[in-house]
Length: 117
Image 1 (cartoon, helix red, strand yellow):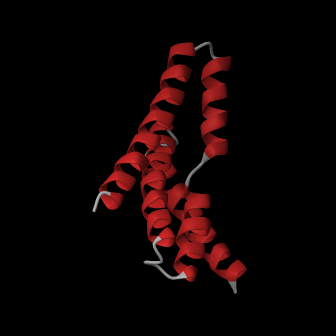
Image 2 (cartoon, one colour):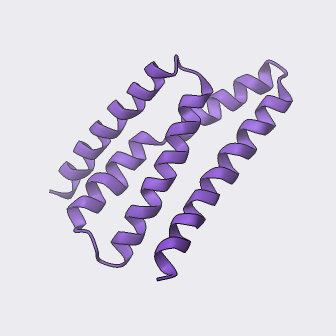
């Protein structure tokens, strides 16, 4: 049953990611948006999972399945490589820096908000 929850979540996550891609005309902002919002979602889900506030099936469906398919490290890597190959080094560095720092920052904020209570 676990595999089914993960698969259904992955299906939903990949559809959501595709929708963002279409709405942003396959621009890097779509990947960035998916990765940042996916980081927020995963941070919340992980916190709730650690505190036993959500059921296992929700963790498998949303945390592992949906978030795993929704966030797009492979696309992020490809877009970064395309910047490098096109000698847009500042774009590549900015994209990597913004993606990592903002994603980590929002995860930190979410954990701070929930663990400070």
